[in-house]
Image (tube, rainbow, N blue to C red; front, side, top):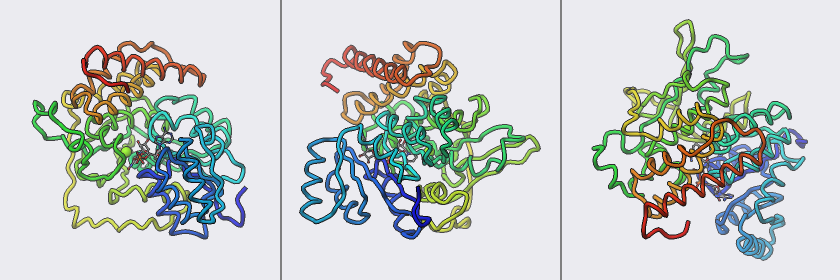
Length: 398
Ligand code: NAD
Ligand code: MG
């Protein structure tokens, strides 16, 4: 479906942190890639600017009023992009025949259906939206396999693991060493964690990212979601995924082999590297990223993770062991908890309390059809809201 070798791309979540980095890489290679569709939730002005620059055939705004505003702006600017709206349109632009690659960069459960649709229609799926895989695990991996899709991980750790795996099969792999910086509160007095403000939580030491994943990095739920993500992507039990705290974020993850070898991928912390890798695979293209200066890095430190400081990481290992329903509950409760924390409705240490409560109510087993996944997600969100209602007297509606 590609014309003259140029690959047609849909960017789900074009206005986000990953979306912007993706457009930055694509703009460096106008001969190789063209944007067919871009989507956003509510950022009308930014999506309009992106349409001016990239002239996609379609632009999707989930919000109907925003879509009308975008359409009006595009018409008066004489730009021919067709505007679609509603969440069904996300799936529509993820499955167009003229689209070769789909960047799945919507945050949270909202990205599940379009990411899955891209896999079901046999696209190259460049997966940043880890929540989608945590929710649908086996169903997603089966969709990739059964429809000839290609799954390229964008999460820097998983991209590093992918690069450090043998080219043919996982022969001789002993363990995955999943690195994480430990976030902004790795060394903060544990008794003061309850006083953490949203502003402090979103200020990550090494990476600049969207708000939700920044809070997840501060609780280390992000690393927990990444453990589950690694289990599915690399068909590995969680006991073989070791989290390694590495504050410099220079090694992006490693694979340990039975012969004693450890293969790592290193680089500056810039998401354009894994994005460029996924776009060009199996080739390599310029990503606009500076070469790693090892003399500047000077040293690499490693620590074991502290489950007492970061209970969310422990919950994620437990959820994956319990099964798919528990992983959905973990993710849903976390999404509600993070939104409530950002709204200043709960404090930082109530995030794991809420999640633990919802996780305890999850059934065992794993859902294998989409509807069961969606029902469990809705049910867990409801239980999370109930926890908020019972534990927070002045709670406002979420
Ligand atoms: P972000 O908040 O910066 O952007 C999110 C994007 O999703 C925006 O374009 C927004 O319009 C869209 N969106 C939000 N809610 C939506 C909804 N309900 N329906 C449709 N679209 C919606 O987030 P981000 O940091 O770019 O992260 C995106 C995904 O990539 C997340 O799953 C995150 O965990 C993952 N990821 C991000 C990074 C990073 O460096 N930012 C690294 C690894 C993985
Ligand atoms: Mg990551």
